[in-house]
Amino acid sequence: MKEEILRIQEEALASIAKVDSMRAIEDVRVAILGKKGTLTMAQSGMKDVPKEDKPAVGQMLNDVRRAISTALDEKLDQLQVEADRQSVAGIDLTLPGRSVAVGGIHPISIIRDEAIRVLRRMGFVLADGPDIEDEFHCFDALNTPTDHPARNEKDSFYFDSGKLLRTHTSSVQIRTMEKQNPPVRIIAPGSAYRRDEIDATHLSVFNQLEGLYVDKDVTIGDLKGTLEYFLQALFGQETEVRFRPHFFPFTEPSFEIDVKLKVAGCEPKWVEIAGCGMVDPAVFEAVDSSRGNKEYEGMTGFAFGIGLDRLAMIRWGIRDIRALIENDVRFLSQLQ
Ligand code: DAH
Image (cartoon, rainbow, N blue to C red; front, side, top):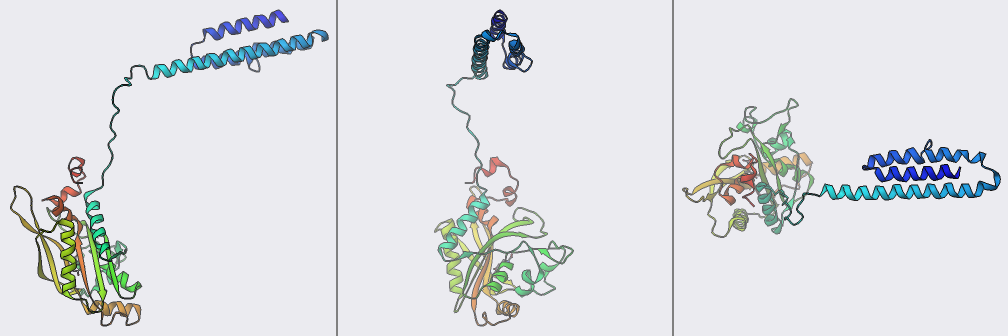
């Protein structure tokens, strides 16, 4: 029995020494120490060993098992070290690391965040409303008659339910006043949708920033001062701004605001960036009747809707608005 155990040990150590892969080492372990392994089988011969020899043979079996087990573990370590060494062989560890391309913030998000920062300093708080609107919030409450061109199916995106993708963020004015008593001082950035022909200055999905200021005794001076201050904070003191009389159903009087776009090597040109005006009393009336009280009666206020994509054009001197949505990283990464 003892000779047999010694023979098994000798053979085992010899085959462990020959093994050259981590997979094979496991096979050897099973072949010797497994349930049907050579050593395990030898162990079952214990029952035929004379009683007085049992302790010594038992001890021997344990020692041999431990010795083989240790040899297997050491071989495994050795193979692991070798595998690690090979996996980095050929890599020059003294080379500088590869730089990882980090994403950037889209120019429209940059300008939107800057605009929000300036307006928050002036006391405006953020408000929100749904992109899928009903005609009441998008048009009726904003004093827009049923035959107004913006309400035409050809100009807006309607759902079968009669709801539509909001044509402007002005609907948030109504949503806010329905919830909140005056005074109100909110801004609402978001998407607006129109079936416009897409060209150098128009997209069918674009970004607006709505503003509404309601209190007692608000004047055109407040409107003009606020927006001029805002545009100069955004584009610099020397920015040229002009207010042109215009018509919007929900403001009276109304204006469009143009800013001079200057691109090196091109004629400077005026770009329309916003609509604004003094809130028409008909809007307050619609809000009051929807709320069922008279909180807004006799209030005054101004409102504005700024095109964020247009602001980006002015900031970076972009002549074609489509460049902002084509997602050409070579172009966008220049605008930070
Ligand atoms: N909603 C208008 C548009 O999308 C812009 C606008 C004009 C917003 C005048 C206003 C406003 O709040 O007072 O063309």
